Image (cartoon, rainbow, N blue to C red; front, side, top):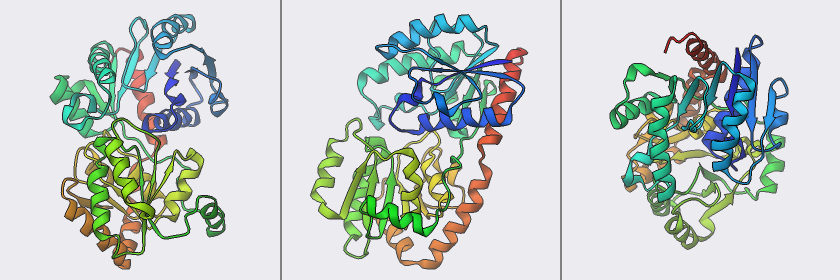
Length: 366
């Protein structure tokens, strides 16, 4: 087979979809030596990551032109058997057999205020259209599959669930390496960690209020990563009022993220809604105990390896954080359960499942 993968999402600074494209594409190339892969980029920046594939670079002044003009024209040149669209959308005019990966339906849940209005209108239109035009639909969790069925009325039999996984770079690191890294990022004090955007659906206002309630009872500061995000003004205002108790690292290069997880004493994931939620698995892979929300796909991902909290209850969040920080045995138990939980997920397994879907699309099984 000649399999295409649309990798424009790699150009994003960070985020789950970027990690998904890189990890899944790398895994497919590791496990499959029989088929030809064609990776379509919008810059040369990530071509070196896939030396065993045919890398096609199409540069464009904007995303719309790339998606709707350059990509359809270029796809026709390569006579591909199937194309994987790993970022929720199949552009119009792509005359190929297509698989679309749906990460979440936050665009359809207005109370989350997850994205700017123009992005929401565009994505709501395009996701619904893409699902109708796709030859196969992949969901990253059972929860997202249920959302696709319940919100958009798609028959669940048309949707295959293929889980994500923590990238292999997320693992325990030697203490000597961590000591050097700690100095570079000024992480000399024990800390609680959160990784992700500061957008409203991540629930940072409640988390910050919970931390503020207990910060004088513990010796830890709160460390946050992530750049500027949609509608994060109130979160940043609250952070500024909390002074030195909160340290914002901003965007951290992907290769440095495992070190931050390794150095943390606790990872908290208070999100209101996720399609999958990779950060808790990344934390577990690095030996960091996890507290996570009881909403959307998150319990499905963390299993019994995290303390589960109601993200709307500030007191419950605060109590859970204080408990884990002060209870060494509980921390040890969560770390051990975390190592067991991540064994359920593997990019190699996901790659084999995606490959089987590609074969089914080629044979018109779907």
